Amino acid sequence: MSKFAVGILIGILFAIMPSFAVAKKPLKVQIMTDFAPQINDDSQNIATRFMLDIEKQLNGAIALNFIPASRLREWQQLHAMKDVCLYNKTKTPERIENALFNTYPIMAFPANRLVVYNHPELPENISLNDAVNKYDLTIGIASGRSYGHEIDDYIAKHNESFMVLGGTTSAYRLSQMLFQNKFDAIIEYSAVFISRHSEDTRIANIRYLSVDKTQQAVFGYIACSQSELGKQAIALFDQALQTQAVQQIILQSHSQIFAPPEQALMLSALQDAFNVAIPAR
Image (tube, rainbow, N blue to C red):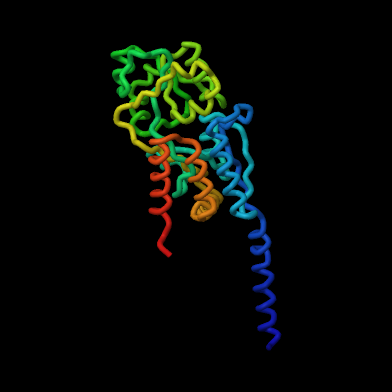
């Protein structure tokens, strides 16, 4: 082999060695979250565990750093920084324009309910318009949270009819204020509320009213900054979520969260989401 050829080979090796070194380093991602560790049995604990399961499945390819932030601030950080991801987020047209979303859901919930305390006179199914105008209910909501397209659209058009609470623990404080009769109602997933207050005897007087024109199943996804690092993170998250190991963890956990008939509905919705997205082998 000529000296010229040897020189070329050596040059190629030196050129690709740095890329090998970089490939061995984990992709460092800042996870902004409104999860409050001091609140036991919050549903966010489950979503957080899923993220840790995904990190473990990726075997050192990604390193997640969890940073507490309110729902409003976490989206601000995602837009301002290149290495931020959020989790358990619903897809909305506005969010899709401003963030990268992964393909596979990590959570599924039944539609949000109008949660009321000591209101036996209200019907089982109600529209937000009737709740506000016919029954004159004061409804509390969390700042920066999406409740699904239909509910978000109504709130945007009638924001003066809702009391908005901000901060990292806003969801928990809303439910406490409901028990204190500071609100007539809040919008929340029934499973979340039950998990959070299962040992509170006052829950016997709580009702979960269906809201007209809402989807049966709502998915929570991972959203990342619109950057090259964000694209890499999304690809890794979806890679892990395509594995049978992670899917079984998610399905098994959901089977324990919900009671029939919502359990079957959520498991079916998740299985469909996984099957539709996974290419045939």
